[in-house]
Length: 299
Image 1 (tube, one colour):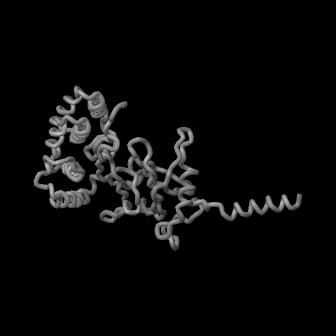
Image 2: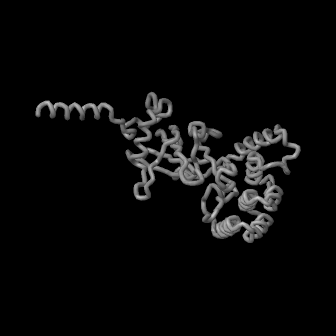
Image 3: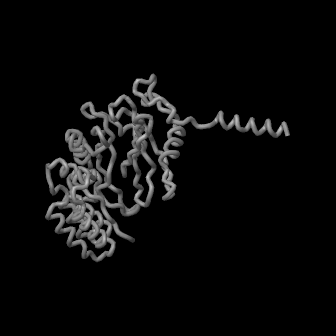
């Protein structure tokens, strides 16, 4: 019996020795030497912390950490934990979780479709302001048949919450646009770009031009051409772009697509029209960028 008790106690001691430290017990202050931004804890510590506090057992969802970083996003003297979650769902849409330690308690903010393979590269400073650059989709998901196109969205702390600050940094988007335009011009197919295959760089560049007000209808000619294609995948792309462009001319084409010969295309076009009519003034980063998430409807 003594031997059994000794083994039981030894087992408990081994478990305690290998227990994952609780991230909550770490020093989250910027002044810590080194602080969490300079020397982050092991991944298993962050994963344990996030799983323990931010799982959603009522809907059977457990956060899956993809990458993480620490930064003084609030410029309050305490670092924030920024976690990119693994994509979930049929469209592979990830999430971003920002955790702040405030008054001894932890506050979590979720941002949809903010996943990144290396979130450390997305936590940057623009004009001295620490921000997180995430990406949101501007074309519909259509399985493995087509790549989804994304544009950057800039999130930052405004003193009371994390909000979309994209419009505060037009210079950032001009720089991204110049890079895309260089890629397009360097493409062997650049001379026939408008009539060539769908190019993600062109769609993204058009979206940024619309966002910056350079050309409200940028990309509409491509969308019109794809809407006349015999392939449903091209018409789905066109439907998404008409929705993103959102000008009266684009919406006329979108309305016409509610009578598409393919029921899925027609349902998606009708769903997008309804969403455009009901979105109001919601503070959605997709809407602020001049885009709207695409409703595909049931299969």
